[in-house]
Image 1 (spheres, helix red, strand yellow):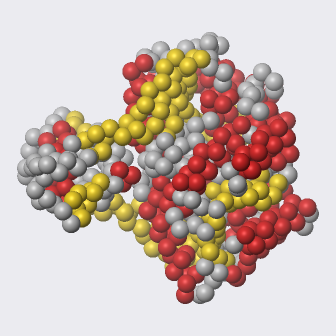
Image 2 (image 1 turned 90 degrees about the vertical axis):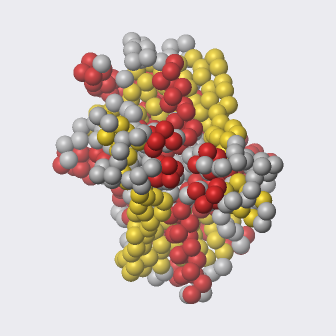
Image 3 (image 1 turned 60 degrees about the vertical axis):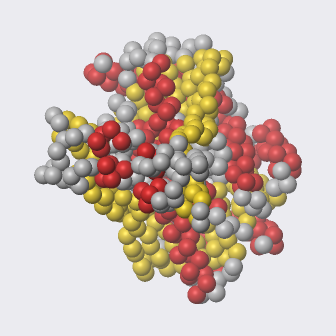
Length: 290
Length: 287
């Protein structure tokens, strides 16, 4: 079983549109894992029918029992997250700031503080139109622990791939270089970097590749909107060459990306023009590399 | 006053709006722009600035000192993040899991886990001549953006009083880094694009801002592409649309070179003026 992880550093470069197209091309052989859990969009293109949904609990939240609290202020003194708010000597926990370390509960002399488990989101297993399955999730508003939810989504996808003897897991990652991205890279067989030739596209590609290199993962790159800035496009290609990153393909600036999305379709379903052909070639290239 | 620019979906124009708005407002106001997208900070790429100051930012992590340790196991017991683990007769610390809560260190009966600083990022402070610019960038491999965002906000608070308009370019998404970047703001501008992805993600961002009880408005970028559902959504929920920045390949090309837009595109300037006047109205109301 091989795991292909698609990331970009910068958001909005076309990761999800490209990943969903690959899912359609891969058909029954491919399990999809949408690991962009705090702004998941893949469901808009693959129209999942939920077959299993579960809450996801991770981390804790401190709660103060006002009947027991003696207003000693010890919790306030030890909290490093400014999460204890004191108004008129009433001590309360600011839920958004609390990181669930539990230190306050340990120093409370009257055991007025308890830690309750936090429900941080929901994850689903769904049938999708490719004839295969997708694992996806929705992080609760402002929730912490997106890295752990990403790990959960990936593990569930792996379990399905194992039981159903699927060859490939396709992982759509989130932007950035922080914990959800680190979590989606863990266990990857191959990383596809989707970038665009803008100063920020190149800058973010370099940062996210530094992370990929730390994990010693093999990577390839798709340059989307490649014709929008030939100069930066060339710089990206030079960077790929220096770092031994496989240049998979150049995709043109094409509003079919948006038109397909507006139709609830992937690009390969929406059009049979040259853009679709290039995406098909890219998928073939990736399968050969694996 | 503090204005945060956020989006839900990545790549919808947060940085474009932040840099152009800062530059536009600086014609008449005192402005400081801060890039809080510490994982992938981009604002600086669009500005020519002279560096005034830079400093490393640290997070505190425990370091085991074995001389007095009795291996009582208390540190492992009190760490809710499994960042401190006792293996045989030694204590292992996993810095990437540590949230710097100090519990293991301060509850250790023999003071065997003193907290030491570990570099997590770098803060830069510069000036463009028109306005101040601050950015922080996370060291690659550091997973937690929140502590660095928090320290950057504190720096801005110390250096700039309330007479400044403080613009914060926020990270994408709706999870903890976005909350940290927006929770102290007086007003939030959510920027999106009129596509199904843009709509889906801006709804998540709107729900987040409602949860935070924030006043906010929406800017539609790449207006003209996709469909009209975002406008129907805003109308239905009484969310003000502050501006519509047109979709154009020329704009995308100018952006790709790292250039500001409003001095080259009169229609962009016109939309920017609407946002600026909305902000100045709010400023008069709250300051």
